[in-house]
Amino acid sequence: MPVFLLIRHGENDYVRKGRLPGRMPGVHLNERGRAQALALAEKLKDAPVKTVYSSPLERARETAQPIADVLNLPVILREGLTETDVGEWQGRSLKNLRRLKVWRGVQYTPSQFRFPGGEGFADAQERIRGEIEALRAQHDPKDMIVCVTHADPIKLAVAFYIGLPLDLFQRLYVSPASITALMISEHGSGLLNLNYDISLNFSKR
Image (cartoon, rainbow, N blue to C red):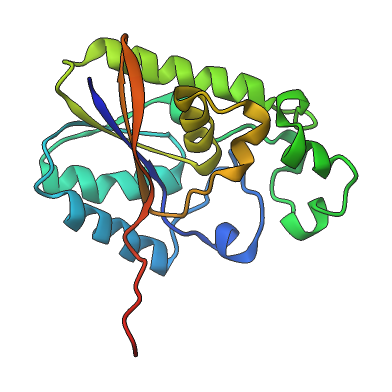
């Protein structure tokens, strides 16, 4: 069974300020996000990773590159790993969006929700499922694969492969620069790890 390490990109100013970047170009990692990318690279430097794939958006590529560098691998861009198309909501404040009546659809009936002028969650889930299946077909069953992508695609993938109804996928949480591990084959799938957050620290200061 190939193991997919689904990595959410590091922090950027849109994440920090609670705005929805969607597929907006030019959204780069901030200082903390760059540090997170380096920490991910350090964590994975001895992992038996065969290939590093990334969403084409800058914040994902900038997270993937340090990982690929320590593993002496290229970053391979895959459109199927890109962020959900949030259409007219791109760039808007989450605080303001939560005041809209349709926000309840995002949280409680995502299977029926489509972003205005954008993608539906059901479509996004089918896209990420198809991408993972396409990558699985290209790899040996023993391979470990890194896919740097975004929060919703990771949650949607996990929901599909563990059989969680789409309307419950928002109960999952994926932090910036976290690692989620899925083991997938034609005989079944398993969630090895969800939201392993390398920045989590309980030490006293």
